[in-house]
Length: 207
Image (cartoon, rainbow, N blue to C red; front, side):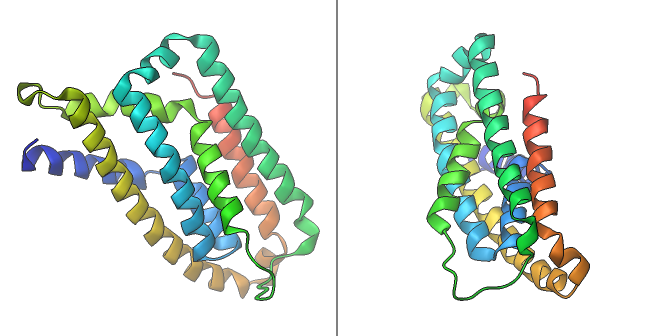
């Protein structure tokens, strides 16, 4: 792999990561509703899930899922159902309002697990890597599988850096929102709507 090849891939990876999608919206939602640490914990979970997708794409397992309409549909609806469940939980909390509570421990471990589950239950991520990685492989250099894996790790690292930056920015936005009582009282509803929309997006997605 040469420098130009890696930098071209990195540029595409950054643009794709910044595009509005389930992962970055989930990080923003958690950062605004709690704090930047919650967003970072979520981001770590999402990126941990990426390791599985990258490995699956590298080993060709993603191709099997793509060929199996049943497997794709089952995983897709499981992911959508999980997000809709999280949305339902947010709607249940709508009466609690949106306040900063420094004495209540935030369940960062739980958010980490949620990030992993959300990513693993989205089959489109594996298919995304299956379609993206081979385009930046230099066949003349051999070791195709290793090249794909390295590119996948590069994608993971830049995604984590961007998600952390987004978490920090979103926390600053959180403080602005806290000054608005109308938004504050409805933050859990907004959070639920965002999660619900992401779930619906995944449910109706196609290969």
